[in-house]
Image 1 (cartoon, rainbow, N blue to C red):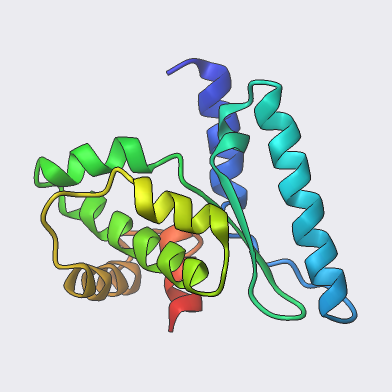
Image 2: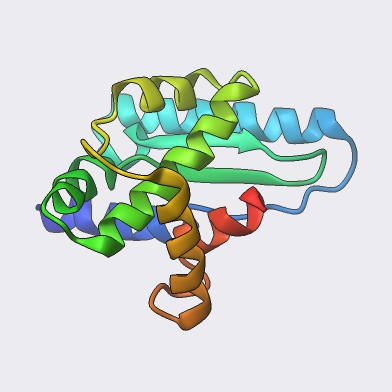
Amino acid sequence: MPARFIASAGLLAALAFVIVALAGCGSQADEFVTKVRAEATEKCNEGNQAACHTIVQALSDTKVAIESTAPIPVETPACNAGQQDACEQMAVLHSELSAWCSIGNTQACAAVNTGPWPLKWDEPALVDAAKMSCLAGRFKTDSSTCRALEMLD
């Protein structure tokens, strides 16, 4: 991968599941989501691949989550090849995006519907295994996987 993409992806990964505390009402959260989506679209149109993989979701009146779908084409083949950690991460990401899709996030729906997702998996069991991986320190507590699990509970 080009270094610039890795740096952009790294930065996005660091921000992948940022919980942003916003003051005020739901309309401010909605405005923030709209602003981030517009900026991501603009950056994507300028060729920033990390921005092309950005999905934003208002979690409440005061919390917004930003997730990246960039790992999907890399981690899915790894999962299909038997790498447990990749399967756990994909299961959590799929669960999170499915939840967002169920409340009308069309970007999340597109990611859920197109993937590519692992061929054979037991998603609930893998989500449970990911919880154990977070608790055991196999995944960093500030990773997008562990943060997503906090929001899914």
